[in-house]
Length: 459
Image (cartoon, rainbow, N blue to C red; front, side, top):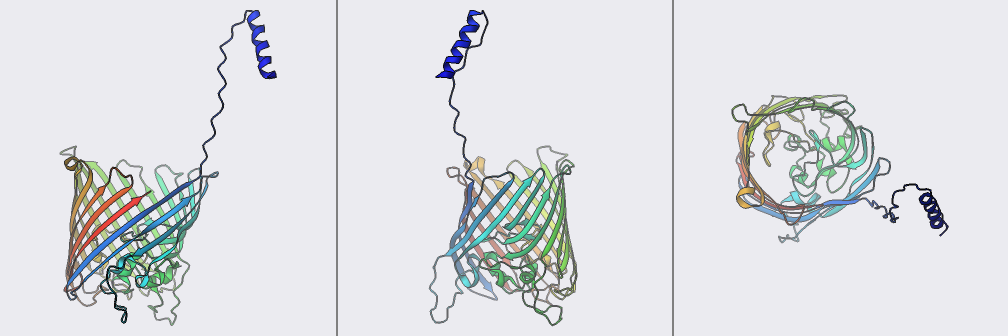
């Protein structure tokens, strides 16, 4: 009351003095500040897979599972955030299992955990701090790097315990420094539970089965298990982890350059290089061209727990896109190597960057192997009035006799397949996907036809 009276006296005095004053705006109560409660994020996934073998094996196996992850990320507090996410999978009993023998041959193992179990665990739990152009993330997290990655090909991905620092102080340049100590392998790892010949070249090591079902295991143990590859009398392959340094440069229009170095303590050092360049076609500016090249070089280090490693791989890719249509052709070579462990490039931590890999056939990293691939995609939006994309591919592998899968045998493997994705407009984040692959001579005389139906809901 006193405040209003004082204002009235001042206004009256100015008017009587002949002063001009602006009209007083009405006082409006300040709106309550919006409270940031953080965010909930996640993905729900349902997956059906059906595979029919012929040749060396003749049977059918299929599985149906649902699951995914749900997490919470805190509000930003002076650059500091934290997040936690629970992952889980539940497989449906769509076959009768022999109660006496426990036979589960009718189930495809790639959708569930170890021994076909259902499980849940804390897959992400990290602190993230961002200041200026630097970001630090420490704890359980998903990684998507060339030679250590999520490989999210079935129900749940690979996840890691790591500290990752990125910096963008240098213009057009991203610097990355990371140290990875432990990993839990996703449900896809059940395909590679042989732990040696096929797994090493396909993203999974000899200790894969130890790191399934949400168990975070030392990176050295994930790679080598309890095997004495270098005959030193020890089966303790735990190590100090994997230290990663990388540089990504995008300072030239259309060009991206990457250089990664993975130092797996007492196992190997791996260098990964990639260059990608895009430009408008000189003959038709409506056609966008792109070309890429990649290289992997590996050598054993320290105690050489994986024994001798001396491997190299290179690949190139050329693509074009015009309107709704895109296509590319790729070629790669892995040099002949006599490494005791692999007979080729070792990829035990889920990294799978090869241009020539198939949907399931990853033979391009075998020793003395030449591979090529052709693929195309078409967006059907204009034809169907919906967000639908269809793609097809064919890839072939000329495998040398020094491969680690069937050592002493050289053969040619191939795979064709298709993929259709539909983003449902009426439900934001909902994607429905149908896929198929048809490997021939995956191993000499082993073929199969596989079909998948996947529903993802991201939020």
